[in-house]
Amino acid sequence: MNDFISRFGFHTTPFTCEIGVTEHFTHDIYREPLEQLLAIIDKRMSAALIAPAGTGKTAILRSINHTLPQTRYQVHYIKVTDLSKRDFCREIAVAVGAEPAGTYPSLVRRLQDRFTDAMDIDGTRILLMIDEAHDIRPDVLGLLRILTNFNMDNRLVVSIVLAGQAPLKKMLLHPKLEDVAHRLALCATLRLLSRKESVLYIKHRCRVAGAVDYPFDNSAQEAIYEIGRGNLRATDHLALKALEIAHHQKCDVVDSNHVTEARGMLWV
Image 1 (cartoon, helix red, strand yellow):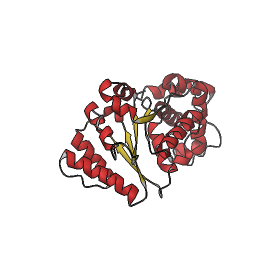
Image 2 (cartoon, helix red, strand yellow; image 1 turned 180 degrees about the horizontal axis):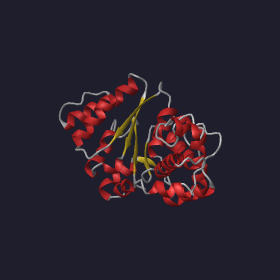
Image 3 (cartoon, rainbow, N blue to C red; image 1 turned 90 degrees about the vertical axis):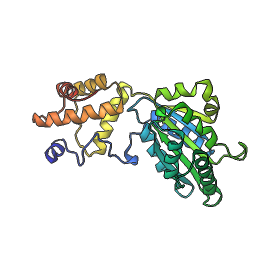
Image 4 (cartoon, rainbow, N blue to C red; image 1 turned 135 degrees about the vertical axis):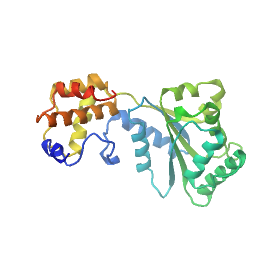
């Protein structure tokens, strides 16, 4: 691995998920939804973030957590699986530091008490970032209407950001979840990178990893885009595997043949 890094002039392995928030790829397609979400959170409201898998949803959530001042916010990240209402409440209770035991109604009351205590006693706002929200059962998603209802719906206490793939939007459009959808002040979206943006992204990831010389030729850039179609995760996997193949073949520049060979080794 050290030889792989030194061949291409990196000081760390590029194209992995281990990248700091300050080193994220900055572009309007990410900057705009991030700013929109931060504005909604500042108003103590809730929102949804809808995007295909591998397009940067979790990176946006990390940026929100990084940006919000800890003196004003308690940010809690929850990754959802197929849970019952009670188990979902228990997951939230563990995240926010509430007692996770008891019946479903008592758990709901305990969570609401924890939310109001954070604001009234601690002087902070609680933000729940719920990832993979498209996996929430519709009846469990309806629970969010209860969790955000304070003082007969006359007080904004907790903000929720639901992050998920396209099925989440379809679920929110169902008439039975109309009340939940109406509590979301924003539905932000992410899209796949364009061809030009894909090249800018690859160059950025090489630069933050320390490369002095750019190791991909034009044919490699084209191949990565044609195969990955602007999906960040697919782009990362293809670029990293192509670099490894080029190194194994003692090549100092990655070309389309390396990318094609990488495709055969990956689920892209």
